Length: 354
Image (cartoon, rainbow, N blue to C red; front, side, top):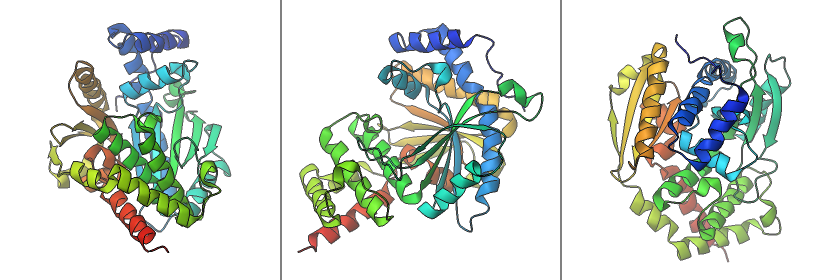
């Protein structure tokens, strides 16, 4: 399988490329190096994906496992928001995700990495479940590893950083709803930017979800009861027209695939391209040996977006049929019906409170 090599350029040159893209996103030389730096992370996340799938089999439930290479616009935006950050040290260019049914399973899976012998070095850990991010309500566990190969080929990728996100289905529903509504509203809600009213609404919902999982609410909501939070969500729904607006946005999305769903089993990578204006999603699938072509197509799509096309792309691997891909990345299919159902239930309960 032809994976991209680690660029020969120095870390200093890679960091300069990142800095250049912050000031000039059209710098073709810098963009080429940044794309090659991103591409080389495909090898280690492929290795991690195999391990994650093996570990997930220990749970007698349906576990969603997915991997992705970070979108270049998101990489550049992150460098803008955090001026001290360097491209060569960005921890989540290569990312993996596991979605499980309960917090108990989340912590068991995390422990299987931390409390057993594991070749790769755990360099950072964030528990946003026990300590939810107060500014936006994000909840998940993040484990950051430094890759260490097991042979001469894999050793070439030593030192690359990878992020493993482990979350519950409820936390996944919340996070993807934030991304989807950000797309609908034209606001970077995921980056904690946009209208304060919408940010506050999602923070309240995060605390409501935390209560249902018997986990800590956001620090800003510690003085509020469950009933207070439910009433606040009901009030926000009335003032913002949340459910009405979501239902108006979430019209049917046409999914255009280069292959029928049943033939997707032999494919390891999927390039998902969202055109939110046209309400269409194009999914192009690639076999394991075509990773180089997949990465080239990914970069070309992003260049089209850079030149003004209203499209977003992500290169992912979720395994299995299209339904699994849609579960792993519902935001790219503008699909938040599960979130709508949860909000409707909260609003209904709030109205029944005395």
